[in-house]
Image 1 (cartoon, rainbow, N blue to C red):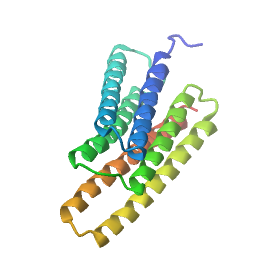
Image 2: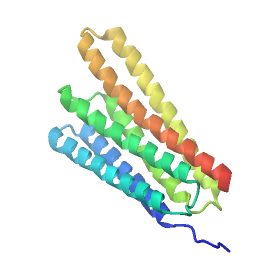
Image 3: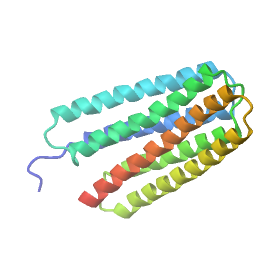
Length: 206
């Protein structure tokens, strides 16, 4: 028996944050696939990022007031930070699309956005799985898929950047696109960071 009950609210709060990240990823995918009403869609993504900031603040505040947590508070801090990074990079992509007055996203941007959606959905499933560490294999399978998706994102990014600098006739335009692709890739990298943290939790507690 537990002498002090662990705070189950953290599972709920982490789930809310990860679900918000999925929402942001899907809004980005919708933006680049249907490149209309860009400013309005970008505003909605920014609002999602702000919602993430609020949820992040709430869980950090709860951590500072709670004696017993479901697993190491350092791991919770790290998870929250990396989840916040994902939505930050998603918002940064939309910001650059507007700032650089991009007329139409490339098919590689669309594919990267799809990979981010798939990755964040796997992240959300893995985080939900943390509530039941009796089935670690399920959680680790989601982490493996996140790693696979990150590798695919890296491949897409490397190929398009190589092509970009081989064929570019406008250096400024090339730099703009490079920054957009790098932000997209960083979003998948942060998903992998979340997977790494979750794997560590599973090893320690499963």
